[in-house]
Image 1 (cartoon, rainbow, N blue to C red):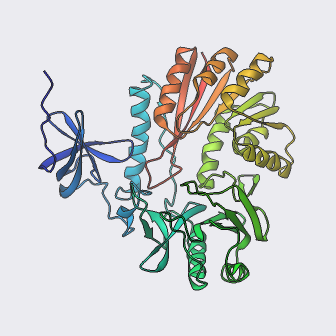
Image 2: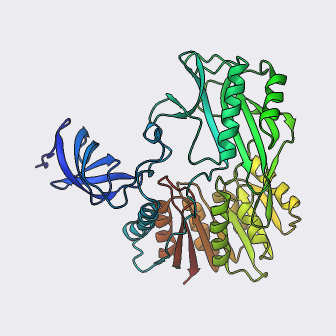
Image 3: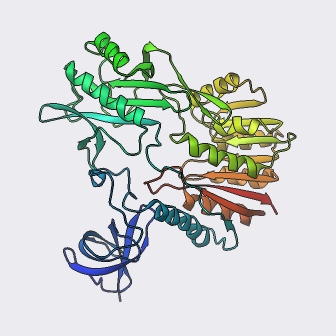
Amino acid sequence: MSKTIPVKKNDFIDVVFEDLTHDGAGVAKVEGYPIFVQGGLPGEKAKIKVTKVNKGYGFGRLMEIHEKSTFRVECPADDAHKYGGCQLQHISYEGQLKYKENQVKQVLTRIGKLDDVVVHPILGMDNPWHYRNKAQVPVGEKDGKLIAGFFKPRSHEIVDTDESLLHLHEINEAIKAVKEIASELGIQPYNEEKHKGVLRHIMARYGKSTGELMVVIVTRVNEIPQQNKLVNEIVARLPKVKSIVHNINSKKTNVIMGDKTEVLWGSEVIYDNIGDIKFAISARSFYQVNPGQTKVLYDKALEYAELTGEESVIDAYCGIGTISLFLAQKAKKVFGVEIVPEAIEDAKRNAELNEISNAEFAVGEAEIVIPAWYKEGNSADVLVIDPPRKGCDEALLQTILDMKPKKVVYVSCNPATLARDLRILEDGGYKTVEVQPVDMFPQTTHCEAVAKIVLA
């Protein structure tokens, strides 16, 4: 006989939150039945309203907090609740770090069955605000006025915002200036429903180490009305701008960038540094949005690789070559693989820019290219993997087990898939030595980690 669900929709109930989910929601239980509530923190007593009831779990809304957690803080952004980018703003930074470190430990135990792996204290930031070096904001219209900002969660309603507490100040200034200039010049915002209008998105990128700014104007049309005035005003108001780019996206789509990009003013790229490596960043380049913490992460990956200068290294999912070029400073040879052709072009350009000649890059899926290399007799002493959130493909994991590199360094942006993949490698003869969590995205639920894995 099926168990009766102990709550009904629209019930008001008093609960105690026991835990946080991977997306930062509080977990309360009524007779063992879990209810997920955004904004609840472990240890807090609160009144909630049940908003949805499923067979195995429900959802609720936080109505009143009777006893607050010591980690609860007032949200510094008045509109933090209006958009989904800062799920943990109501938690002190100390609390956020504890939550993320625990998340890594829990999934390693629960999913990976890795109870004995050393998980080091998470590496956080001195200042966990204003760290993002890139923004791309949608443009729309409200009450006849051009607006730009963030989408409300689970909607396409734009919240007009001039100041994001996650973006670098230079990024906020650039977005605000372009929005004001477009409005002054009467450039029409894009209407998503009617697929009319001109200005779809404003993007800004900033090289923190170089002070160089790029502005990207994404439009539905090929010609920007009053383009010269727009460019001249941007140059006049933003002294750090080095590149103004026009991207054309004429399709009825949620994808931000279109296929055609042209430089309106200045350079095609701006530059930034991570450690001693210099990177050229174009409008479409993938580049880490928090380069300071990226260096922390990659330094740890380099440490775990324990390179002596004699090793052959494969960097799967190499992107624009960020980790590859770090590794190339200490390795004999590095081979990078990436599915995005433009990223490989950037990787080659960045190798040339840094006069690094012992790194080669190939376009393709890691799970196809690396097994092909192995069949041809090309192996590696160290394999570095930095996969997307879904983790490694089974074919790549099998190739690792067949190839048997002495060491695998796994850089992860999703602790759950990291734990899953580590279990597969462990079952295939590897040993996970240690894991280092790194907070790349403060105020959000995302957590990165790097794992050192050796052939047992």
